[in-house]
Image (cartoon, rainbow, N blue to C red; front, side, top):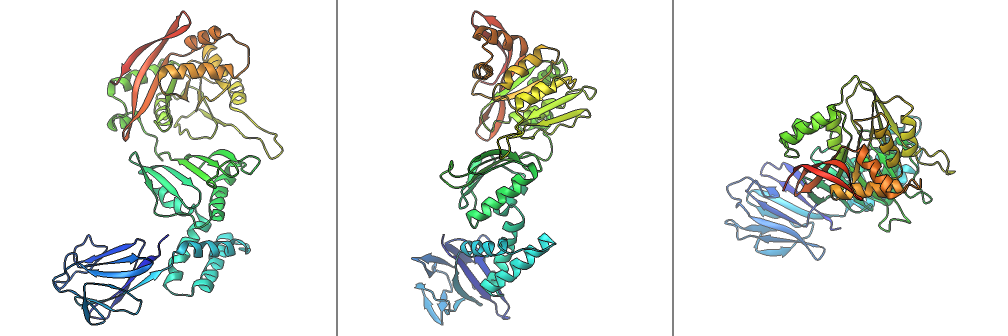
Length: 464
């Protein structure tokens, strides 16, 4: 990574200020859009630039009206040293290169976590961090810039913190400690910041997993978890991941999106919304299909708001992320095996147990395997109005995938019997797709009956 450009500015009254630019070129001028705006009549709108060229600083005057002086000599372009004084109008500028902070933060981080913080963990960490930064960087400007970045990595989610707090960011992807992407308004963007080291990233992962009790190590190198706000987290580490630890966070809004909000966003039209509202109230069994990131969970949350409060509702999830504002709600979450390989509680076990809990409706966050058979049997045996989601590219593909998942139950059921079970249990398939930056309800299909060996479906709504 390139070093940073630091510019110190002194005005006519000898007032000084410093600016640190995390980029390879700095534009100087009177224009407010300049990187370093200097508002004075003797300064041109785009007066000059300072840039890094072959690891050295270079200054170039952009044919400004009043020119630039370096150590009293008017110049057009020239290499800079830290002792050079550049005169731009009434301002005196000095430039220097500041080494990349990341290796320094990584070294400070290692030293801080190797020392005991004492009884008051946070206060101890802050005290140790301050002392170590001062020892390694002195007590000047660099120390003041490094300290907050170090504390951020020690006590929060580090460079992920600002992304998790930004409501416009929908997904965060960490590809090893040195690369972070995020999705904003449907576009993938490379984050300007990274973790200082793999140790820092692994400690961030630990902070995510400890509250949920999930296990992650070389023997079990993949895990699904969640953040306190319900955001979905997937983590995979070496030796499975060759990029180092990889972390993917699917963020969820703090407020559950209502159907009216989805209508205003263009995700669903009013007639389709009214149709689904009536379908939920009439206790029709609904499966929501779509690819990754199409908004299946968001729509499931919205549809669940139409369930009457006098009904007992049981939700079952692999990692709890549904946010249902319901007065009679039981939430169940699966559990992975412990270090000894014992204690696992599967989605299928939870579905079976839920049937003994006198539910009026069952919601399975996502059907992924053999639990699909138990879910369909529940729909067929006195629990209508149940909801679930599954990954599929089309409604037809969704039913085929459902067949495959039921076969995973290894009950020896013939394919025709499985299809009969599906056609009698399911009422509607709601399919979602991503169109540019929008997530939309592409179609709603009614599951009819078997026609020969094929499950017949009737399209109720479809966006061409």
